Length: 410
Image (tube, rainbow, N blue to C red; front, side, top):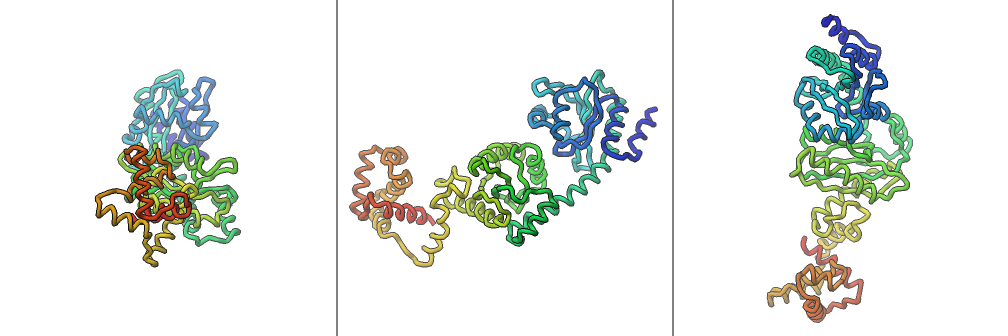
């Protein structure tokens, strides 16, 4: 009888639903089949005795995020990633999870998906475990076929995204046709995000990133690609949300999980473009995200908490001004005078001036940052004004001084 049941898995099935039903009949338990990113592929029938986690998975076509999070915390998913044997999962009423047995579906070392069996009215025994292993082996070819179709679509998405990023796709009609083919809404407002890992992203990390993008983030990127050390994303927004909200929410929900699932020692620098509502502006948005990364590298202290192009303020113009200064050889005479005075008298008036301007000319804030008394700072400002002939009531002079002080570092 056992041989006959095992042979059932090797026959041709009209659908994966039929395959899931066959497994369920063999082990007498409700069964779900998921892909590697916990999206529901097929499920068997069940009676009224089931749990809320299974119901939620069927309704939303994916495992609820709170369930996935808990399965990572209790070691279930890490165990499934390491072994081809069934893994027993104890019930957890807080997340609506009943007793289960899970097994990974693999093609050699590549994870394709999972089979989950809900233990209702019985506990799976050794023979049931062997049947699950046979079912997982039989499921391999079926999931490989799905993956081939998925990879072809993913390749088309990658090609489309790179054409947008590099400006090789500008015609509205052609963009619209590609969006229809890939089931994307070409009128959805979006931002381009670039996450700099500081070193090349490994193939193992690519798989983890893909897993997280499909599993965790409550804001789903429509397109993503990896270029050496950069993870590049096209993130859909909506008319009611400000770009800063999208950037903050995505960074908060995704970046922390990214670090914990890859390597907590990796320092990931995020950057977001301005929002756009036309895919013909993708190249422009991408350049904005790269500009944010460039400025954050050059001015890490000043822009440490800035992640979006819109919030860069005057730093949007820094590269342009810096290039102009290289060609003209201009030096701010007020700063030059202060530098000579500091060198001759062993003072730090240039540092004082920079901190004062950085703190928006607020004496108390600047004094605290410099760790001196406000009266001391006022005395220094008076000397700075006299030596460098600076009028602190002139906003144009203060703005130019601020820019030149920052640019002087380079």
